Picture 1 (cartoon, rainbow, N blue to C red):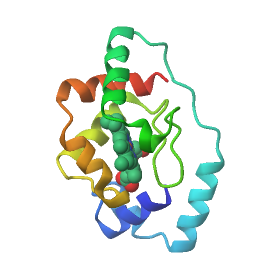
Picture 2: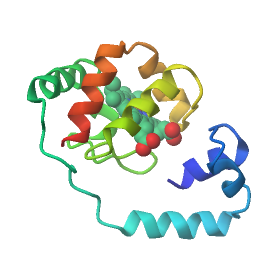
Picture 3: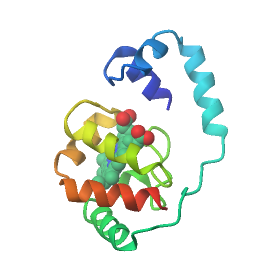
Length: 134
Ligand code: HEC
């Protein structure tokens, strides 16, 4: 999350709500905020899986696209690679669209732009559903 604030501040990740806020935080604030949020217990999936067939497709897509090679076997992420397990479905869809359309440029040598470019709408829907229910 440290890098996300830096990206919002520099404008390389664009969001009308976050940018003016990120512009006001200095490097020490960013370190402290990141340390605090990282110390919170990650949430569990918010709702029971109402579409296991879609999750199965998402799991297959995650396997085929090797998402776990960076995000970890349990999709918990590590260091600058984001946690995906239990993240909200709408947010995951938005994030993948933003990478795919180059609205969001991540760290890790554009790793996600490269990954998302190849994802179909069907895969994005299935991946988001699967990951949100882990
Ligand atoms: C080569 C390594 C790599 C692979 C493979 C990869 N990712 Fe990522 N992913 C990253 C990195 C690094 C970030 C953080 C980028 C940033 O700072 O915006 C990220 C961020 C994300 C985010 C944003 C999370 C957030 O909290 O904003 C999503 C969603 C995501 N990845 C989904 C996927 C999915 C789904 C796959 C498989 C289709 C995948 N990733 C494969 C490296 C990878």
